Amino acid sequence: MTASRTDGADPAPNPHATAEEVAAALQDTKLAQVLYHDWEAETYDEKWSISYDERCIDYAKGRFDAAAGEQPLPYERALELGCGTGFFLLNLMQAGVARTGSVTDLSPGMVKVALRNAEHLGLEVDGRVADAETIPYDDDTFDLVVGHAVLHHIPDVEQSLREVLRVLKPGGRFVFAGEPSTVGNFYARWLGRLTWEATTTVTKLPFLREWRRPQAELDESSRAAALEAVVDLHTFDPSDLERMAASAGAVQVKASSEEFAAALLGWPVRTFEAAVPAEKLGWGWARFAFGGWRTLSWVDENVLRHVVPRSFFYNVMITGVKP
Image 1: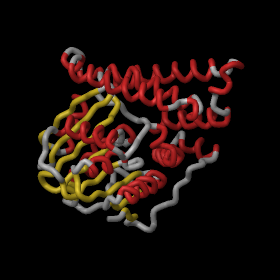
Image 2 (image 1 turned 45 degrees about the vertical axis):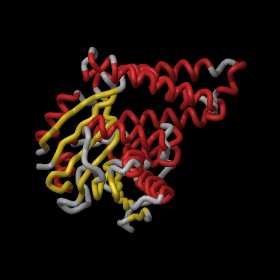
Image 3 (image 1 turned 180 degrees about the vertical axis):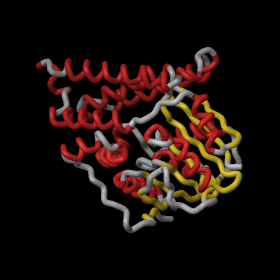
Image 4 (image 1 turned 60 degrees about the vertical axis):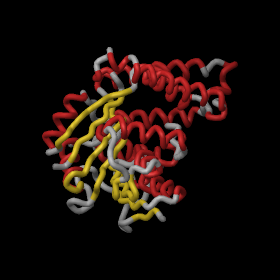
């Protein structure tokens, strides 16, 4: 089984945008998407602790099950929209959710990494550089369309969902997870900003200098953060996302949400990891971060889900079916 690029005319990745390109991207959201995600592609898995082993296989399958409920598996052919490095689809394929797959992303760098990951895993996957608002596949092609943290990057979400329904076969399902809620995004951004400011300020002290990343890396992260503000276009209330999917033509539409206490830990942890040298954070830190997230996720699911409104949780998931 192999991973392959199906369109030889795909543009090449551009991982080192010039200052002029960044300035232009501030006025052009789709250019910003390409530059930001090309810049992140080669380090994205490391940044977000993404793997293709049991840990992330279980996580991806858990998100799928939480959104869609129990489904007859496997789906024959699946598409991941805005694939990034392939995290969601490749791990779902390893979990037995789909036999074959296709990946698309506006970023050539992300498609390149996703296909490389698929090849290393021995998965049958093809890929295209593509705009989510005009998916380059024929009508009635896929049994399943998935995406993780992609809808909030798309200018016209409802148009993209119409395209998803077009390429799905009748009765086919879509599952999107990892979308930021409006309330969750507010507290996550503030937590991330405060953690970044505190960490980069404290590590200026002479006895903590070795915990400070080189200034050039911090400056590059700040430029990326400026682009991130341009590429993150939407936040969602679960009810609004349900109405959007139904308006696009989907049936059996259902939104759900997760991560409240887990997000309050997760965002400071990820920001701290981005601000200090990676070699300073060993196995003990990784155990703390993952173990803390798992524990608080259990609290979210078994306790807080019953008392906290779904709009307060950070991650929103949506599923629906093509009539």
